[in-house]
Image 1 (cartoon, helix red, strand yellow):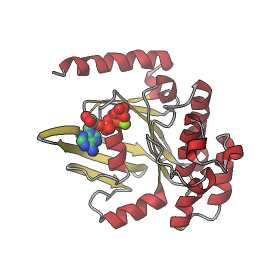
Image 2 (tube, helix red, strand yellow):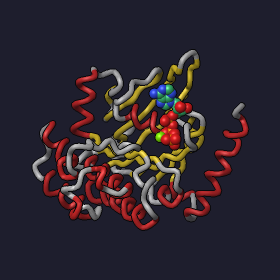
Image 3 (spheres, helix red, strand yellow):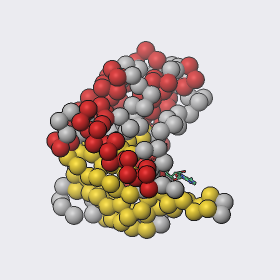
Image 4 (cartoon, helix red, strand yellow):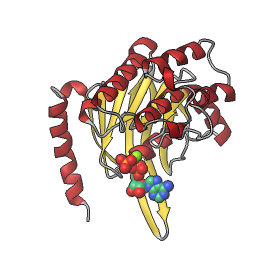
Length: 254
Ligand SMILES: Nc1ncnc2c1ncn2[C@@H]1O[C@H](COP(=O)(O)OP(=O)(O)OP(=O)(O)O)[C@@H](O)[C@H]1O
Ligand SMILES: [Mg+2]
């Protein structure tokens, strides 16, 4: 593992039991993530993207393989130690937002800072993030009073509240229009460039993935491709390569 690798997974595997059936959500996945890079994770529905993010955040434990955070085995830590590291170092944008319904947007975003010690300038930085995401006029709304896109942006603002070093975002633009998703990509890029933050974002959308430095493609729980974005001329070419890659994985299914 090189000095600049912030997170690495080795031979990662995860299975779920569903009644008598066992589902292999991830199988033999290995890669490293460079500090300060923006990595997009693509893959069809059910290919294991959320499972991968949950494992990286320590919300799930792997059945096989290891997760290394700065070279140390993150997956073997106790639940408490993992939770502490996660709160301080990792911002997580949940696919279904996970906003608390009885708290206002401002309270939802402030919550992580109440639960743990935040960096000194986190509050000011958080206010800037809310402003950048166009949420400043919605701070006193509860989640049900927000549009889908506003809820999604609120989940991003909350994930950034502790000024995390690593941001794991599960389809952070899934509910945004083209303008909104380009804006969020710009924010994620700025996090990497200006703050040295490392971002891993799940997306189905080639126009989002094209903003990343590197693209991982999952199919049926396996890593099908790990390519620098420079391999693709534009979003259209990426979309074609992605469809080609997914087609055989689909045909192999019973
Ligand atoms: N808690 C669970 N119990 C049983 N099976 C699960 C569980 N979580 C995920 N799975 C299964 O594991 C596989 C991968 O799921 P995952 O949520 O990681 O997919 P995904 O790539 O995020 O899909 P989507 O794009 O639809 O969000 C799926 O077959 C799913 O049904
Ligand atoms: Mg998912």
